[in-house]
Image (cartoon, rainbow, N blue to C red; front, side, top):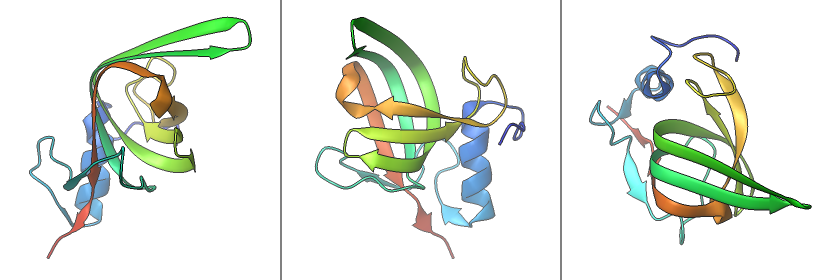
Length: 122
């Protein structure tokens, strides 16, 4: 936490974790076995690839918006089926250092996410 992994790009953190655990992956953007996050459980350690995501949610009288054009993060904690805590870097909040933030699956209004379950390597 609060340290830069690799060059500080978002995928550097996923790369580091997958390499350190000897997981199988294509060393590009397929981080393991693709799961259907709408029907399968998401677990800590799953890797999420975000593509052209727009989020919108309300809290009290306020409406919040967030976008992620192309981003990679790791699930740090599952709070419930719609609320995750991500660990990632190269974000507006943490810059090129590793940090956590909440992500609301039920707030996705545009774009796609791909959830990968790391697969043990040889």
